[in-house]
Length: 480
Image (cartoon, rainbow, N blue to C red; front, side):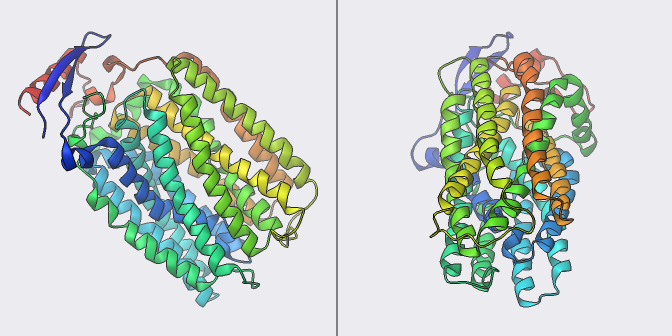
Protein backbone atom coordinates (compact mmCIF):
# COMPACT_ATOMS: atom_id res chain seq x y z
CA UNK A 1 0.00 0.00 0.00
CA UNK A 2 2.82 2.38 0.74
CA UNK A 3 6.56 2.75 0.58
CA UNK A 4 8.90 3.41 3.43
CA UNK A 5 9.59 7.10 3.57
CA UNK A 6 12.11 7.71 6.35
CA UNK A 7 13.36 6.64 9.77
CA UNK A 8 13.46 8.90 12.79
CA UNK A 9 14.91 8.38 16.22
CA UNK A 10 12.98 8.30 19.48
CA UNK A 11 14.09 9.08 23.00
CA UNK A 12 14.63 5.42 23.93
CA UNK A 13 17.00 4.89 21.01
CA UNK A 14 14.63 2.91 18.80
CA UNK A 15 14.24 4.07 15.21
CA UNK A 16 10.74 5.15 14.23
CA UNK A 17 9.83 3.94 10.73
CA UNK A 18 7.73 6.34 8.67
CA UNK A 19 5.65 5.59 5.58
CA UNK A 20 4.38 7.58 2.63
CA UNK A 21 0.62 8.01 2.79
CA UNK A 22 -1.46 7.24 -0.35
CA UNK A 23 -3.23 10.06 -2.22
CA UNK A 24 -6.55 10.44 -4.05
CA UNK A 25 -9.65 8.45 -3.16
CA UNK A 26 -7.53 5.66 -1.75
CA UNK A 27 -5.78 8.11 0.54
CA UNK A 28 -9.11 9.55 1.67
CA UNK A 29 -10.49 6.11 2.47
CA UNK A 30 -7.39 5.03 4.40
CA UNK A 31 -7.11 8.35 6.22
CA UNK A 32 -7.45 7.67 9.95
CA UNK A 33 -10.01 10.48 10.30
CA UNK A 34 -12.23 8.80 7.68
CA UNK A 35 -12.02 5.56 9.61
CA UNK A 36 -12.90 7.25 12.90
CA UNK A 37 -15.88 8.91 11.17
CA UNK A 38 -17.08 5.46 10.05
CA UNK A 39 -16.47 4.19 13.56
CA UNK A 40 -18.64 7.03 14.83
CA UNK A 41 -21.47 5.99 12.51
CA UNK A 42 -21.25 2.41 13.77
CA UNK A 43 -21.95 3.76 17.26
CA UNK A 44 -24.44 6.33 15.93
CA UNK A 45 -26.65 3.47 14.75
CA UNK A 46 -26.17 1.30 17.85
CA UNK A 47 -25.21 2.82 21.20
CA UNK A 48 -26.40 6.27 20.06
CA UNK A 49 -29.96 5.04 19.52
CA UNK A 50 -29.76 2.95 22.68
CA UNK A 51 -28.94 6.19 24.51
CA UNK A 52 -31.91 7.93 22.89
CA UNK A 53 -34.29 5.23 24.15
CA UNK A 54 -32.68 5.01 27.59
CA UNK A 55 -32.63 8.79 27.92
CA UNK A 56 -36.42 8.87 27.84
CA UNK A 57 -36.43 7.11 31.21
CA UNK A 58 -37.62 3.52 31.54
CA UNK A 59 -36.89 2.89 27.86
CA UNK A 60 -39.86 5.12 27.02
CA UNK A 61 -42.31 3.16 29.19
CA UNK A 62 -44.60 4.60 31.82
CA UNK A 63 -43.43 2.04 34.40
CA UNK A 64 -39.64 2.29 34.65
CA UNK A 65 -39.19 -1.02 36.50
CA UNK A 66 -38.85 -3.23 33.40
CA UNK A 67 -36.39 -0.80 31.82
CA UNK A 68 -34.36 -0.62 35.02
CA UNK A 69 -34.21 -4.43 35.33
CA UNK A 70 -33.26 -4.73 31.66
CA UNK A 71 -30.41 -2.29 32.24
CA UNK A 72 -29.28 -4.40 35.19
CA UNK A 73 -29.05 -7.32 32.74
CA UNK A 74 -27.26 -5.17 30.14
CA UNK A 75 -24.61 -3.94 32.50
CA UNK A 76 -24.16 -7.19 34.41
CA UNK A 77 -23.18 -9.16 31.30
CA UNK A 78 -21.34 -6.11 29.95
CA UNK A 79 -19.23 -5.98 33.12
CA UNK A 80 -18.17 -9.62 32.78
CA UNK A 81 -17.59 -9.65 29.02
CA UNK A 82 -16.02 -6.19 29.00
CA UNK A 83 -13.14 -7.31 31.22
CA UNK A 84 -12.03 -9.87 28.63
CA UNK A 85 -13.32 -8.08 25.51
CA UNK A 86 -9.94 -6.48 24.77
CA UNK A 87 -8.35 -9.91 24.53
CA UNK A 88 -11.18 -11.10 22.27
CA UNK A 89 -10.70 -8.04 20.07
CA UNK A 90 -6.96 -8.62 19.83
CA UNK A 91 -7.56 -12.23 18.80
CA UNK A 92 -10.46 -11.80 16.35
CA UNK A 93 -9.52 -8.39 14.98
CA UNK A 94 -11.41 -5.13 15.37
CA UNK A 95 -13.62 -5.41 12.28
CA UNK A 96 -15.09 -8.78 13.24
CA UNK A 97 -15.39 -7.77 16.89
CA UNK A 98 -17.29 -4.62 15.90
CA UNK A 99 -19.55 -6.64 13.60
CA UNK A 100 -20.48 -9.05 16.37
CA UNK A 101 -21.07 -6.17 18.74
CA UNK A 102 -23.71 -4.41 16.61
CA UNK A 103 -26.37 -7.15 16.67
CA UNK A 104 -27.48 -6.70 20.27
CA UNK A 105 -28.72 -3.12 19.81
CA UNK A 106 -31.29 -4.07 17.18
CA UNK A 107 -32.57 -6.91 19.39
CA UNK A 108 -32.75 -4.68 22.47
CA UNK A 109 -34.81 -1.91 20.87
CA UNK A 110 -37.00 -4.51 19.17
CA UNK A 111 -37.80 -5.95 22.59
CA UNK A 112 -39.43 -2.65 23.64
CA UNK A 113 -41.57 -2.76 20.50
CA UNK A 114 -42.63 -6.26 21.59
CA UNK A 115 -43.44 -4.89 25.05
CA UNK A 116 -45.64 -2.18 23.54
CA UNK A 117 -47.54 -4.84 21.59
CA UNK A 118 -47.57 -7.52 24.32
CA UNK A 119 -47.57 -5.95 27.82
CA UNK A 120 -46.38 -9.20 29.41
CA UNK A 121 -43.16 -9.36 27.36
CA UNK A 122 -41.05 -7.90 30.16
CA UNK A 123 -38.97 -11.08 30.39
CA UNK A 124 -38.01 -10.72 26.72
CA UNK A 125 -36.83 -7.14 27.37
CA UNK A 126 -34.62 -8.32 30.24
CA UNK A 127 -33.24 -11.22 28.17
CA UNK A 128 -32.50 -8.90 25.25
CA UNK A 129 -30.66 -6.67 27.70
CA UNK A 130 -28.43 -9.58 28.75
CA UNK A 131 -27.57 -10.31 25.08
CA UNK A 132 -26.88 -6.64 24.45
CA UNK A 133 -24.42 -6.56 27.34
CA UNK A 134 -22.32 -9.26 25.66
CA UNK A 135 -22.43 -7.47 22.31
CA UNK A 136 -21.70 -4.06 23.82
CA UNK A 137 -18.61 -5.37 25.60
CA UNK A 138 -17.18 -6.48 22.26
CA UNK A 139 -18.17 -3.35 20.35
CA UNK A 140 -16.70 -0.85 22.80
CA UNK A 141 -13.38 -2.68 23.19
CA UNK A 142 -12.89 -2.60 19.42
CA UNK A 143 -14.08 1.00 19.16
CA UNK A 144 -11.77 2.28 21.88
CA UNK A 145 -8.68 0.55 20.56
CA UNK A 146 -9.07 2.04 17.06
CA UNK A 147 -10.12 5.51 18.18
CA UNK A 148 -7.05 5.84 20.41
CA UNK A 149 -4.54 4.02 18.17
CA UNK A 150 -5.18 5.95 14.94
CA UNK A 151 -4.28 9.50 16.08
CA UNK A 152 -0.83 10.74 17.00
CA UNK A 153 -0.24 11.77 20.62
CA UNK A 154 -1.01 15.39 19.79
CA UNK A 155 -4.34 14.57 18.11
CA UNK A 156 -6.08 12.21 20.52
CA UNK A 157 -8.43 14.82 21.95
CA UNK A 158 -9.53 15.79 18.43
CA UNK A 159 -10.17 12.19 17.36
CA UNK A 160 -12.16 11.49 20.53
CA UNK A 161 -14.23 14.63 19.88
CA UNK A 162 -14.87 13.61 16.25
CA UNK A 163 -16.03 10.18 17.35
CA UNK A 164 -18.09 11.53 20.25
CA UNK A 165 -19.84 14.07 18.01
CA UNK A 166 -20.88 11.48 15.40
CA UNK A 167 -21.82 8.92 18.05
CA UNK A 168 -24.04 11.39 19.90
CA UNK A 169 -25.80 12.35 16.70
CA UNK A 170 -27.50 8.99 17.22
CA UNK A 171 -28.97 10.25 20.46
CA UNK A 172 -29.90 13.58 18.80
CA UNK A 173 -31.61 11.98 15.79
CA UNK A 174 -33.26 9.35 17.96
CA UNK A 175 -34.61 11.97 20.33
CA UNK A 176 -35.83 14.08 17.39
CA UNK A 177 -37.68 11.07 15.98
CA UNK A 178 -39.17 10.41 19.41
CA UNK A 179 -40.19 14.06 19.80
CA UNK A 180 -41.89 14.11 16.39
CA UNK A 181 -43.81 10.87 16.91
CA UNK A 182 -44.78 11.67 20.49
CA UNK A 183 -45.51 15.41 20.25
CA UNK A 184 -49.24 14.87 20.71
CA UNK A 185 -48.89 11.65 22.71
CA UNK A 186 -50.66 11.70 26.07
CA UNK A 187 -50.34 7.97 26.85
CA UNK A 188 -47.05 8.35 28.71
CA UNK A 189 -45.29 5.64 26.68
CA UNK A 190 -43.39 5.85 23.39
CA UNK A 191 -45.42 5.11 20.24
CA UNK A 192 -44.77 1.95 18.17
CA UNK A 193 -43.57 4.05 15.23
CA UNK A 194 -40.65 5.35 17.28
CA UNK A 195 -39.42 1.86 18.11
CA UNK A 196 -39.91 0.67 14.51
CA UNK A 197 -37.79 3.55 13.19
CA UNK A 198 -35.06 2.73 15.72
CA UNK A 199 -35.09 -0.97 14.81
CA UNK A 200 -34.59 -0.11 11.12
CA UNK A 201 -31.70 2.26 11.89
CA UNK A 202 -29.92 -0.24 14.17
CA UNK A 203 -30.30 -2.91 11.48
CA UNK A 204 -28.54 -0.59 9.02
CA UNK A 205 -25.80 -0.09 11.60
CA UNK A 206 -24.99 -3.81 11.53
CA UNK A 207 -23.65 -3.42 7.97
CA UNK A 208 -21.28 -0.46 8.56
CA UNK A 209 -18.30 -2.40 10.04
CA UNK A 210 -18.01 -4.21 6.68
CA UNK A 211 -16.80 -0.97 5.13
CA UNK A 212 -13.99 -0.29 7.62
CA UNK A 213 -10.39 -0.63 6.40
CA UNK A 214 -7.94 -3.17 7.75
CA UNK A 215 -6.28 -1.39 10.72
CA UNK A 216 -2.88 -2.71 9.62
CA UNK A 217 -3.08 -0.50 6.50
CA UNK A 218 -3.72 2.77 8.33
CA UNK A 219 -0.92 5.36 8.34
CA UNK A 220 -1.23 8.18 10.84
CA UNK A 221 -0.75 11.86 10.06
CA UNK A 222 2.93 11.74 11.09
CA UNK A 223 3.68 8.86 8.72
CA UNK A 224 3.80 6.12 11.35
CA UNK A 225 1.59 3.07 11.25
CA UNK A 226 -1.01 2.36 13.90
CA UNK A 227 0.35 -0.24 16.35
CA UNK A 228 -1.85 -3.30 15.86
CA UNK A 229 -1.49 -6.35 18.18
CA UNK A 230 0.17 -9.52 16.97
CA UNK A 231 -2.02 -12.55 16.24
CA UNK A 232 -1.24 -14.23 19.56
CA UNK A 233 -2.89 -17.33 20.99
CA UNK A 234 -5.93 -17.10 23.28
CA UNK A 235 -3.75 -18.12 26.22
CA UNK A 236 -1.28 -15.31 25.57
CA UNK A 237 -4.07 -12.78 25.02
CA UNK A 238 -5.50 -13.58 28.47
CA UNK A 239 -2.00 -13.49 29.97
CA UNK A 240 -1.72 -9.96 28.53
CA UNK A 241 -4.35 -8.81 31.04
CA UNK A 242 -1.99 -9.66 33.88
CA UNK A 243 1.02 -8.16 32.08
CA UNK A 244 -0.73 -4.79 31.82
CA UNK A 245 -1.73 -4.70 35.48
CA UNK A 246 1.70 -5.92 36.61
CA UNK A 247 3.77 -3.54 34.49
CA UNK A 248 1.46 -0.52 34.65
CA UNK A 249 -0.24 -0.62 38.08
CA UNK A 250 -1.05 3.10 37.94
CA UNK A 251 -4.00 2.10 35.74
CA UNK A 252 -5.69 0.90 38.93
CA UNK A 253 -6.01 4.51 40.08
CA UNK A 254 -8.33 5.15 37.12
CA UNK A 255 -10.70 2.35 38.16
CA UNK A 256 -12.87 4.54 40.48
CA UNK A 257 -13.20 7.07 37.64
CA UNK A 258 -14.24 4.24 35.32
CA UNK A 259 -16.73 2.90 37.89
CA UNK A 260 -18.44 6.30 38.20
CA UNK A 261 -18.65 6.97 34.47
CA UNK A 262 -22.15 5.50 33.90
CA UNK A 263 -23.49 5.70 37.44
CA UNK A 264 -24.99 9.16 36.91
CA UNK A 265 -27.17 8.10 33.96
CA UNK A 266 -29.72 6.39 36.22
CA UNK A 267 -30.47 9.50 38.25
CA UNK A 268 -30.34 11.78 35.21
CA UNK A 269 -32.59 9.64 32.99
CA UNK A 270 -34.99 7.87 35.36
CA UNK A 271 -35.06 10.13 38.40
CA UNK A 272 -34.74 13.59 36.85
CA UNK A 273 -35.97 13.38 33.24
CA UNK A 274 -38.58 10.69 33.82
CA UNK A 275 -39.36 11.85 37.35
CA UNK A 276 -40.22 15.44 36.38
CA UNK A 277 -41.35 15.71 32.74
CA UNK A 278 -44.07 14.37 30.44
CA UNK A 279 -43.21 12.18 27.44
CA UNK A 280 -42.89 14.87 24.77
CA UNK A 281 -40.79 17.05 27.05
CA UNK A 282 -38.54 14.08 27.92
CA UNK A 283 -38.00 13.61 24.17
CA UNK A 284 -37.04 17.26 23.76
CA UNK A 285 -34.76 17.02 26.78
CA UNK A 286 -33.04 14.02 25.22
CA UNK A 287 -32.44 15.95 22.00
CA UNK A 288 -30.87 18.82 23.95
CA UNK A 289 -28.86 16.49 26.22
CA UNK A 290 -27.22 14.58 23.36
CA UNK A 291 -26.67 17.78 21.36
CA UNK A 292 -24.83 19.31 24.30
CA UNK A 293 -22.61 16.22 24.44
CA UNK A 294 -21.17 17.10 21.05
CA UNK A 295 -20.22 20.61 22.16
CA UNK A 296 -18.83 19.31 25.46
CA UNK A 297 -16.53 16.85 23.66
CA UNK A 298 -15.35 19.48 21.19
CA UNK A 299 -14.67 21.96 23.98
CA UNK A 300 -12.75 19.37 25.98
CA UNK A 301 -10.64 18.52 22.91
CA UNK A 302 -9.32 22.10 22.85
CA UNK A 303 -8.02 21.63 26.40
CA UNK A 304 -6.62 18.14 25.82
CA UNK A 305 -4.96 18.98 22.47
CA UNK A 306 -3.73 22.47 23.32
CA UNK A 307 -0.15 23.62 22.75
CA UNK A 308 0.83 23.05 26.37
CA UNK A 309 2.76 19.96 27.47
CA UNK A 310 0.77 16.74 27.78
CA UNK A 311 1.12 16.81 31.56
CA UNK A 312 -0.26 20.37 31.70
CA UNK A 313 -3.17 19.33 29.47
CA UNK A 314 -3.91 16.38 31.76
CA UNK A 315 -4.13 18.63 34.81
CA UNK A 316 -6.21 21.15 32.85
CA UNK A 317 -8.73 18.47 31.90
CA UNK A 318 -8.90 17.21 35.49
CA UNK A 319 -9.55 20.74 36.81
CA UNK A 320 -12.30 21.41 34.26
CA UNK A 321 -14.03 18.17 35.28
CA UNK A 322 -13.76 18.94 38.98
CA UNK A 323 -15.38 22.36 38.54
CA UNK A 324 -18.17 21.00 36.32
CA UNK A 325 -19.05 18.24 38.81
CA UNK A 326 -19.60 20.76 41.60
CA UNK A 327 -21.42 23.33 39.46
CA UNK A 328 -23.96 20.81 38.16
CA UNK A 329 -24.55 18.96 41.42
CA UNK A 330 -24.93 22.01 43.64
CA UNK A 331 -27.44 23.30 41.09
CA UNK A 332 -29.27 19.94 40.95
CA UNK A 333 -29.45 19.60 44.73
CA UNK A 334 -31.85 22.55 44.99
CA UNK A 335 -34.23 20.86 42.52
CA UNK A 336 -33.93 17.40 44.05
CA UNK A 337 -35.01 18.75 47.45
CA UNK A 338 -38.38 19.67 45.92
CA UNK A 339 -39.70 16.23 44.89
CA UNK A 340 -39.59 12.54 45.83
CA UNK A 341 -40.36 9.22 44.18
CA UNK A 342 -42.36 8.60 42.03
CA UNK A 343 -42.10 12.26 40.97
CA UNK A 344 -44.75 14.44 39.31
CA UNK A 345 -43.78 13.51 35.69
CA UNK A 346 -45.98 16.36 34.46
CA UNK A 347 -43.73 19.32 33.63
CA UNK A 348 -44.18 20.46 30.02
CA UNK A 349 -41.75 22.54 27.98
CA UNK A 350 -44.35 25.31 27.65
CA UNK A 351 -44.25 25.98 31.40
CA UNK A 352 -42.09 28.67 32.99
CA UNK A 353 -40.60 26.26 35.56
CA UNK A 354 -39.16 24.18 32.71
CA UNK A 355 -36.42 26.67 31.77
CA UNK A 356 -34.01 26.27 34.70
CA UNK A 357 -34.40 22.49 34.78
CA UNK A 358 -33.71 22.02 31.09
CA UNK A 359 -30.55 24.13 31.29
CA UNK A 360 -29.37 21.90 34.13
CA UNK A 361 -30.02 18.85 31.93
CA UNK A 362 -27.98 20.45 29.15
CA UNK A 363 -25.10 20.99 31.59
CA UNK A 364 -25.33 17.33 32.59
CA UNK A 365 -24.83 16.52 28.90
CA UNK A 366 -21.69 18.67 28.92
CA UNK A 367 -20.44 16.88 32.03
CA UNK A 368 -21.01 13.41 30.59
CA UNK A 369 -19.08 14.11 27.39
CA UNK A 370 -16.28 15.82 29.33
CA UNK A 371 -15.97 12.86 31.70
CA UNK A 372 -15.94 10.20 28.97
CA UNK A 373 -13.60 12.21 26.73
CA UNK A 374 -11.10 12.72 29.54
CA UNK A 375 -11.27 9.05 30.55
CA UNK A 376 -10.45 7.97 26.99
CA UNK A 377 -7.73 10.61 26.67
CA UNK A 378 -6.01 9.46 29.87
CA UNK A 379 -5.92 5.91 28.55
CA UNK A 380 -4.47 7.24 25.30
CA UNK A 381 -1.84 9.14 27.31
CA UNK A 382 -0.65 5.83 28.76
CA UNK A 383 -0.24 3.91 25.52
CA UNK A 384 -0.32 4.06 21.71
CA UNK A 385 -0.62 0.27 21.32
CA UNK A 386 -4.05 -0.77 19.98
CA UNK A 387 -3.79 -4.09 21.81
CA UNK A 388 -3.14 -2.50 25.19
CA UNK A 389 -5.76 0.18 24.52
CA UNK A 390 -8.36 -2.48 23.70
CA UNK A 391 -7.69 -4.15 27.05
CA UNK A 392 -7.74 -0.86 28.97
CA UNK A 393 -11.00 0.13 27.29
CA UNK A 394 -12.28 -3.31 28.27
CA UNK A 395 -11.36 -2.56 31.90
CA UNK A 396 -13.05 0.84 31.55
CA UNK A 397 -16.28 -0.60 30.14
CA UNK A 398 -16.29 -3.51 32.58
CA UNK A 399 -16.04 -1.30 35.65
CA UNK A 400 -18.37 1.27 34.15
CA UNK A 401 -20.96 -1.45 33.58
CA UNK A 402 -20.52 -2.99 37.03
CA UNK A 403 -21.35 0.38 38.54
CA UNK A 404 -24.28 0.88 36.17
CA UNK A 405 -25.72 -2.57 36.98
CA UNK A 406 -25.67 -1.73 40.69
CA UNK A 407 -27.29 1.67 40.38
CA UNK A 408 -29.97 0.53 37.91
CA UNK A 409 -30.89 -2.20 40.39
CA UNK A 410 -31.02 0.37 43.18
CA UNK A 411 -33.44 2.37 41.06
CA UNK A 412 -35.51 -0.73 40.25
CA UNK A 413 -36.07 -1.39 43.97
CA UNK A 414 -37.07 2.28 44.28
CA UNK A 415 -34.43 3.74 46.57
CA UNK A 416 -35.17 7.41 47.29
CA UNK A 417 -34.17 9.83 44.57
CA UNK A 418 -32.03 11.83 46.99
CA UNK A 419 -30.00 8.74 47.94
CA UNK A 420 -29.21 8.03 44.29
CA UNK A 421 -28.37 11.67 43.64
CA UNK A 422 -25.93 11.88 46.57
CA UNK A 423 -24.26 8.60 45.55
CA UNK A 424 -23.74 10.03 42.06
CA UNK A 425 -22.06 13.16 43.40
CA UNK A 426 -19.83 11.28 45.85
CA UNK A 427 -18.62 8.75 43.26
CA UNK A 428 -17.73 11.43 40.72
CA UNK A 429 -15.65 13.33 43.27
CA UNK A 430 -13.99 10.10 44.48
CA UNK A 431 -13.13 9.14 40.89
CA UNK A 432 -11.35 12.44 40.34
CA UNK A 433 -9.46 12.27 43.64
CA UNK A 434 -8.15 8.77 42.89
CA UNK A 435 -7.17 9.76 39.34
CA UNK A 436 -5.11 12.77 40.43
CA UNK A 437 -1.98 10.86 41.61
CA UNK A 438 -2.12 8.78 38.42
CA UNK A 439 -2.11 11.98 36.36
CA UNK A 440 0.82 13.29 38.39
CA UNK A 441 2.94 10.13 38.41
CA UNK A 442 2.08 8.32 35.17
CA UNK A 443 1.21 10.82 32.43
CA UNK A 444 4.39 11.76 30.55
CA UNK A 445 4.93 14.10 27.66
CA UNK A 446 5.65 11.17 25.31
CA UNK A 447 5.09 7.40 25.41
CA UNK A 448 8.20 5.38 24.53
CA UNK A 449 8.43 1.87 23.09
CA UNK A 450 10.09 0.72 26.32
CA UNK A 451 6.80 1.37 28.12
CA UNK A 452 4.77 -0.69 25.63
CA UNK A 453 5.30 -4.12 27.17
CA UNK A 454 2.18 -5.71 25.67
CA UNK A 455 3.12 -4.99 22.07
CA UNK A 456 6.49 -6.65 22.76
CA UNK A 457 4.83 -9.83 24.06
CA UNK A 458 5.37 -12.95 21.92
CA UNK A 459 3.33 -16.17 21.82
CA UNK A 460 5.42 -17.78 24.55
CA UNK A 461 4.62 -14.94 26.96
CA UNK A 462 8.14 -13.48 26.70
CA UNK A 463 8.52 -9.69 26.46
CA UNK A 464 10.95 -8.95 23.65
CA UNK A 465 13.64 -6.27 23.83
CA UNK A 466 12.97 -2.84 22.39
CA UNK A 467 15.76 -3.29 19.85
CA UNK A 468 14.31 -6.58 18.62
CA UNK A 469 10.87 -5.07 18.01
CA UNK A 470 12.34 -1.99 16.32
CA UNK A 471 14.42 -4.20 14.00
CA UNK A 472 11.32 -6.20 13.03
CA UNK A 473 9.51 -2.98 12.14
CA UNK A 474 12.39 -1.88 9.93
CA UNK A 475 12.43 -5.23 8.11
CA UNK A 476 8.66 -5.07 7.63
CA UNK A 477 8.94 -1.54 6.24
CA UNK A 478 11.72 -2.54 3.84
CA UNK A 479 9.58 -5.33 2.37
CA UNK A 480 6.31 -3.32 2.27
